[in-house]
Length: 331
Ligand SMILES: Cc1cc2nc3c(=O)[nH]c(=O)nc-3n(C[C@H](O)[C@H](O)[C@H](O)COP(=O)(O)O)c2cc1C
Image (cartoon, rainbow, N blue to C red):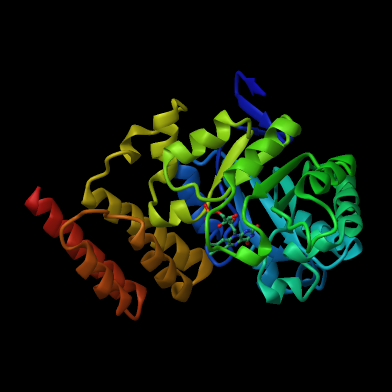
């Protein structure tokens, strides 16, 4: 639903339907802040273990991070409705969220083994109990699922969605790959848009969003929002480009940033990461961000190699600054 202050989607007010997906090991507080700045209207935490939270595990609790200016969705996984509710209770003591989301999509064995992620697609009854159990906190409750397989899962994707909606789910993010596909092959956009037609206002899209036209296809097909995942990792400016291409409010300064400005943005984000998540993570994040920045810029490949061998933040930042100065001198 579109209103004066943007959209109400899944019970959450957002300025646009272009959002950042949950990405384990990536969507930390700093990465979320960067994408909020670049124009994402809503961000997700990484998936967080409800069991870890319920045991007040400090490392797990740190994944929640601080609050930012746009809605943040807390994503939780496994192992059962009671633990999930206990985990949510702890999370709500620490952070502020626009919605809570149950991860029913992660295909990785370390999550499925703990009865989380895509393992939930085998257990519609427990999935519905998880949703119903979270409703008592008064926030919108979302689910993120994958396409199911007829011979493997008890319910079709459509029937699974219907059951979740019946249990009180406010929004379902559908990733059009089966768990067996993991992250390979093509994501089935057709099933996502056919579910959007079947359940108007309830389906958000994930899968193979690499260019503004992919987001347009999902939105034209009736999806209420689209999540940028690997697309935003490969091109850090995918979200502002999409906003601009589809006519949503966008900050023009992020559309054609000079190499020096991109480097400054990266260095600033890295410094924040050193403070919020520690130097080791900041180095990893800066290298990941570099793969999605400076596209087509002369010398960028060498810069990426140089940064890969930096052992601390000071030397990585020096390498970045030297590159920015050289490219400014060339301009
Ligand atoms: C590195 C990585 C980490 C991910 N972590 C999560 C996660 O924590 N929770 C989740 O629901 N999905 C996770 N996903 C799945 C993405 O949110 C998204 O649904 C998927 O990548 C499909 O979109 P894409 O084809 O546009 O990348 C992850 C994907 C990647 C590549």
